[in-house]
Length: 599
Ligand SMILES: Nc1nc2c(ncn2[C@@H]2O[C@H](COP(=O)(O)OP(=O)(O)OP(=O)(O)O)[C@@H](O)[C@H]2O)c(=O)[nH]1
Image (cartoon, rainbow, N blue to C red; front, top):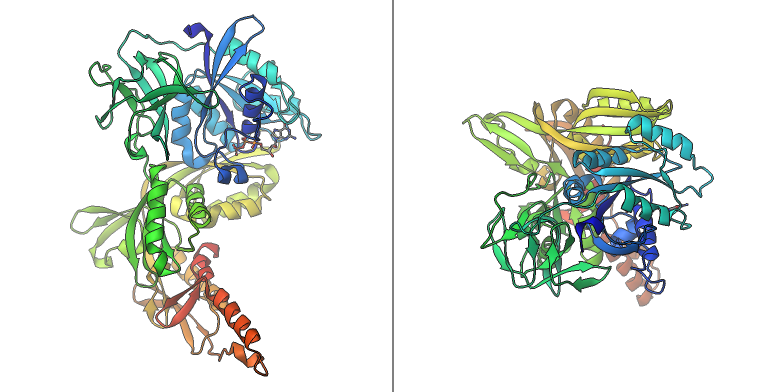
């Protein structure tokens, strides 16, 4: 296929603006998906994704389209993940394209992520054109949203496509625009192979599958390829395209997009952003922009039932196979026993992994409060990274501690600005900018410590703005802060899994809130329970749970054994999410209480 007839493009959209539905329509229209095969939202493969309506794993598909000019085109749709945690993956997928469709919900307008992603696309020199989706909705205001896009992003919208993916309106117009507006790829098939690896995943039957955009050269079955970041080499077993099912092709040539299977064992070896070349005829330099993504948010995962430890380890290993940005290391807690300290790209990533462990692997877990990575500078001049309060050295050994800051852009309707400012100030934010994008929509930009954001920022943001806020963030830098370790003690014993690293000014307030919350959550037991919060050795708050004799069988008069058994069963159920700390039983909610306390 001559390059003139290839188009590589992505769909850029804010969550829920209709990216997957539009992709489905394009597949359907071009016959890649027959009506019988049609399954809603083909591109969102995993069940969990479908249920939550978000795209996690990038997926790409080749469409054949005969345009109005009578020529046949190959359109490669490169799907990008849609969430704030996966920005790097989005940026790599975008560099595999020459153009993008900016899909904006005509009833909603521009959101934080629309902006973030469109800037990524413009940075990657993509040709971007606008599609206004959901014009079937009575609340759709295409003219207002067009004006908004022109004003905020500066994109020309006079010939924006008006579409309703739901009703199949505008699909052909979108395909024509792709052909007309997006330039064909460039590249030299005669040069040594240079390909961008923009996605990889583990397939149970075929091993690691990588998606590549061939920049120069050709790759085919039998070739010896090399990954330039780690110098590992492999033989190509299959090269092909998704149309939408996997189909082998004789070769992938400069300008094309497709998959390679080459006996790569772990996704950790096939990192997004890497350059693929030929072992014996390598290209002169790797493609720019490769970076290692590192987990930013950490949390401890412990099986409630200690006999599930091995199963948890196996499950984590399985998930890791498919997710090189996720990490786990064994960890022991005095309170919770054996578990793992897991690292995630962000909060959503964390939620997804936890949910999959519980749902797909039937594990019952206790999750500790998420933390970030701190830099601790010792009095001896050394610096260490820590991800949990328990790794914090003794106070006298610490010179100072630094914490990560993010730059957060929040888009809200103007009536919520006051609430957002109060929230950001409370979270130790530093205001950068408040900008009226339109008379009713405002962009609030704050520098915020990530440790405040991982606690309950999203929930608070949502409740303050009734769900109308959108958030995007990037890591800014590390800053010195007055951070202390806040301990919770139950009957004098420190519950290590509940320790927090927190700003000095907040320790007192949070300590008090925590113990009173925990008092509500810890059921009365046979003896008195003291709950204390302490900074170092100094106790700053205390509550007591009074003793109670709890005898479930007391309710049974007579000797009805089945009734008795039922009650005992019920009590066992109730114990499910309990963990013993010393001789005190703590419910899972007590561990989560840390997340729920405001301030
Ligand atoms: N009324 C109406 N609803 C639509 C239209 N297009 C999509 N939707 C609905 O909007 C919701 C979100 O659509 P998706 O296609 O899943 O959105 P998305 O942008 O892919 O979402 P992510 O995968 O989270 O990025 C779904 O409930 C769709 O059915 C449309 O043209 N009109």
